[in-house]
Length: 114
Image (tube, rainbow, N blue to C red; front, top):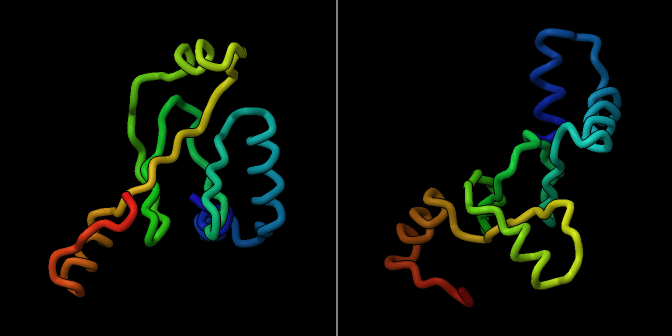
């Protein structure tokens, strides 16, 4: 969820909540390592549960989908020679909705540069 989505959900239960309060709390939770911040260029930051998982990012609409891949930490440490604290893998793709829209609009969709 974005900070704004959290704000609007909270606003229904707590009408006096301020957007700045939501941002401050989300940033504090992120700094404490209790939530993950997912940044995708051109879109607002999103906050997610702090469990080991990766994301598919639609390169057209920016939607996120969770995926669970095997942990790459040991491989990354072996390749870099450094102790890895964590990583954020975002794989670009076209979500089913965007792919269907493009196929409907242009006939058979042909991926460019993939």
